Image (tube, rainbow, N blue to C red; front, side, top):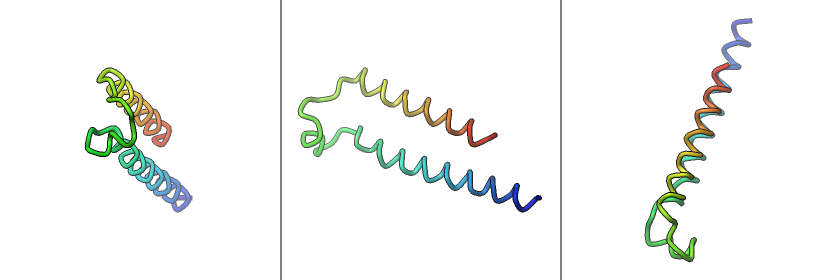
Length: 69
């Protein structure tokens, strides 16, 4: 029984780590840089940028809560 419990939480932590790693890699496209002109024809408004970041933070908090149960 303890092995099943341990494996469950190890798998949850591994999935959470993979999700956060993917989220970090995907969110790198939000940063301004030389390649932004290739991805977006116009600059991203600052309010839209922070709304996107807030959405990522909220989603990450929700996933951490789900994985903790």
